[in-house]
View (cartoon, rainbow, N blue to C red):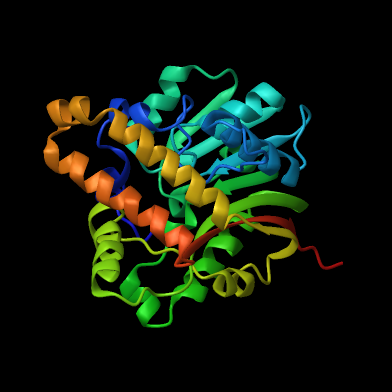
Length: 287
């Protein structure tokens, strides 16, 4: 990954207890899918996992790898729904610790960079899932040099080696789109990139469409801009409910930084600076 292990720790290792205060009860840290106005954050995150489970066409006879599995909520959903074998990889020690503490039956997780991962015994998975992990693969400096599509293509080519011929990849990513026009908005986005998610950059949709070839074809594509706006607004609301606890345990700077970051996210999705995409990808086999 372009983001180093140290940078990943900045993003995700503040404290598992800290994130547990304001994420949903299973700790999804990615865009939820609100199918009804009455959906809670918990239900919307369950919806997201269902969409991806169905994109990968998983069932109790299949094997799956979750690339960038976070604290394991999506893998937990997959195992509850039914799977023969479930594996996950993350670069965060704190996330690995959380997953192992959950004791999810039949689940194996590795704390490793995807570039260094090799499926055990050379196995090929029936399906792949990756949720907003690709945001860590290209730095702003690399994108400025025109390297983004090549970096993303190397990723898709690499993971294609781990899937059975014709297998399905349920893929989700945050997208960058328009650039804000005011200095304060630009400063807030820069703060989020530099302080909360150092080393990473959200791809543009057209970059992903180019990069999936020649390994995958896009079977289905859904954008989720409005859904991510609602998700981040709910995270912000829950964070602010725990202001006193967060300041006491992690300091005022941590609280203020995360209020600024999440407030920026809400504006980003409202104003089309950012979006989110879910893709159903099929591994290309040329006969």
